[in-house]
Amino acid sequence: MLAIKKIVILGGGTSGWFSAAVLAHQFKKSSISIELVESDQIGIIGVGEATIPPFIDALQSIDIDPIDFIRETQSTFKLGIKFTDWKTLDHDYLHPFGQIGQDFNHQNFYQSWLKLSQQGSQLPLMAFSPSAVMCDNNKFAFPNQMPQTPIQASAFALHLDARLAAKYFRKYAENLGVKRTEGLVEDVALDDSGFVNHLTLQDNSKISGDFFFDCSGFRAVILGDALGVEFEDWSEYLTVNKAVTVQTSEEEDFPTFTESKAQKYGWSWRIPLQHRTGNGYVFDSQYCSVEEAKQTLLDTVKGVPLTEPQLVHFKTGMMQQSWKKNCIGIGLASGFLEPLESTAIHMITRGIKQFVRMIPKQHDEILVDEYNRRMRRDFEEIRDFLVMHYCLTQRQDTEFWKYYREMLLPKGLRHKLELFSSRGLLVTGEEDLFANDNWYSVLEGMGIRAKNYDPLLDEIEFEEIAAKIKQIPDSILKAIQSIPGHKEFIDKFCPSKNVD
Image (cartoon, rainbow, N blue to C red; front, side, top):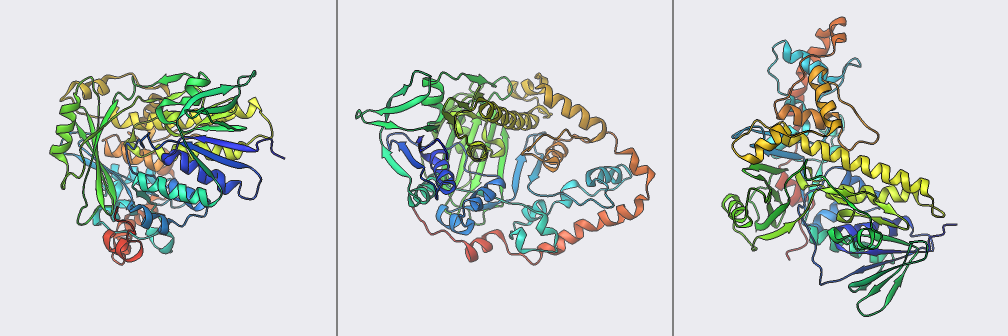
């Protein structure tokens, strides 16, 4: 029998309502009640509207049909991220989702490809990625509907409307019994042991609970203000601290990737939806004024602006504890990592799923410590992956890019890059979000290739492996001939239901 009888969630938006949806699904057959407190006076902070493949699994884990979700949120499909001008000006590369290549005779594909390249092969790494080839041809198909073809090794995510996504999760959660209370929090009351007892709203009503989720965004009303957890600043590693955003008219034939274009003092994004395109410029205010950032954004967007540019302030880092006493911070209340690899919604998912895996019968510091260890590991892994995009640049046209060329790297990242450069080996961690193929894509895209391949490849009959590898690009190209274009696929299977 669980000691938790009532869960209180402070804050709505994607963070609060997705948390409510997951918890409501998990406890739909129990007596646990869930109440979400939010105020219409507080807007939703959305610094990006893109996801990564684990989001699809998260939807399906709570019995949400991805097709229905896509229709209701006016989503499009995403097969990767295109990085423009990151290595040098006028250079671009793709970080695709899913598998790259195929192991033959138990030999690692990347090592085999590396040996082939050193023998003179001109086949690029992306020629072996089904998602990359689909991106190049702007085509799409569900991997599980393409068995016995290379397409089944691809993976996809979504571009979505954050406002409509929050609305969708709210409807889902309320249908499962989640109660919504409108109001602004005036005070957080703690008991004698320092646990949260209740929230007091501006109308003096009190919301009591046994466990609290802080989804109040950067304010971290419970975890930070009331429980005193301090924020760990990582802006020395990721210096961008503001973003300006604007929505533009929809594109005629939206691509299957998010575009991230490096600018003088940061980078801009383009995220195509069915009904509009989301755009933003993430920048370092040490070098760039807000007005300059707005003008840069407006000068580079495609389509007609539908809104006035909006400004978002943020700081990269994480709370030193994600779980303290009877409260867990979710989303921005637990930390922020810039949206370069679209990991924000993933961290919401991770935070709530880790709680479900560790939900205690009673307060247990061992579980709290383990939860905090796992969340720190996730934050640090993503941080290092993001830093890699910056520190490998060859640009030195502004002080912003010069800083990253000379910066002191986090110890773990420095070791990983040195090991990879030497022999193409990567240090993998427990339940890492980014697999080897993700690292290979960015490293190759930024011009970093291992000096040596696995010497054991010289001890085997390599010709047969080489012949099989060389057949992969043609088999991918042949497979995509039979699949529809991206917009054609959406128009046929999941056109938007909404026009607002």
